[in-house]
Image (tube, rainbow, N blue to C red):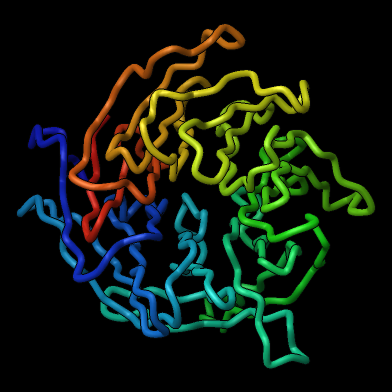
Length: 342
């Protein structure tokens, strides 16, 4: 889909509820398709699949499906070639894998590693491994991370059911774990990091799970809510603390000391997204209604100001930089999704 002839820089979609979780598809045939999750403080929530219609230049909702509790995160299968089934994963009370078609979305499997209890520890986040799409990692309030193996059942073109199993579960932090992300270092399959309520960033290697490395601790022991790896240089990652006005950039080669602090926001930072195509550009979004793009080439010299700023009409809850089309960033605030050409 070529939108460059239209010269429109911003496209907006209004959902019937507050939008929180959001993700771009990476399939080459569905470039302007996103999944959105509702944030309604009750059991009954929704996920919508929306796409940009080329003719009308408007977002259209392809289908809506029910989801128990709000989705804490939504991720499309990282399948840039379109060889796997069209799958979508969501986290909330459990990790669920959904199969998407043009008309409907149906649940393929529910992954629950707490088989012997009625109680479930909600999942705060998860990540889908880009090198091996049969690997997912979840983070939970019960202090653990779980690595899941997925079988997508592609036997001789027959559409088999998707199933999953626990590869490993580990106690990752002293308190709740709030985010997990696979690193592209060392082949991109085995290394991952997590952040949590104990204020630390910890790094793990699936080949050596008997120990982990603490690469940063918040000086005030404030909980760390998100982490995000640089897409081009696996030495760098970004994180942010709860209610903090700044995002912190870390270099795994220099543990415990931030290489940069991005602190132009005037209210709590809610989201961080690295550019998919550049090692030195990162976007932050916050409750001050602003999405800021930063050029961090000057590190370790202080990064004073962003190079680009966009002001939305509400507090920005989430931000994503489209991995297969680096000209586009998506944000959500209130009940709105906007995609912005950068």
